[in-house]
Image (tube, rainbow, N blue to C red; front, top):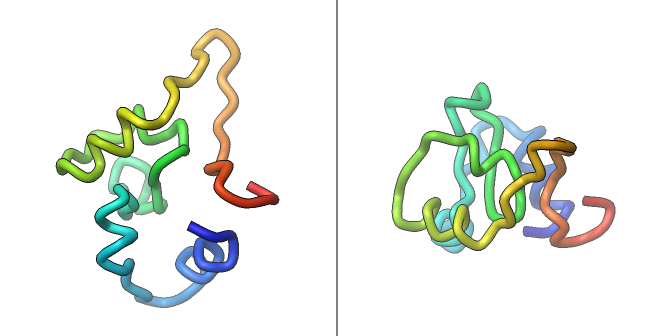
Length: 80
C-alpha cells in the first residue's frame, strides 16, 4: 500500500478498502481501536483478527523483537 493511500484511508470518512487490499491482509482491527493494520506492521502479531488473508500477512511479517520493541508502519514506501 502506498503512503498516499494509507493516509487517505486513515484520515477519510468511511473510505472502504479495495478487494486487493483486503486480500493482502489489510483490515480495521478492533484490538487497536479500529486502527488499520496490514502486512509489514509488527502490530499484526498482537492483533486477534483471523481470516486466511490476515493470517498470511501475519506469517509474512517478521516477529517483533520483544526485548527492544519498536512499533512501526510498514516499510512499503518512504516515509514508512
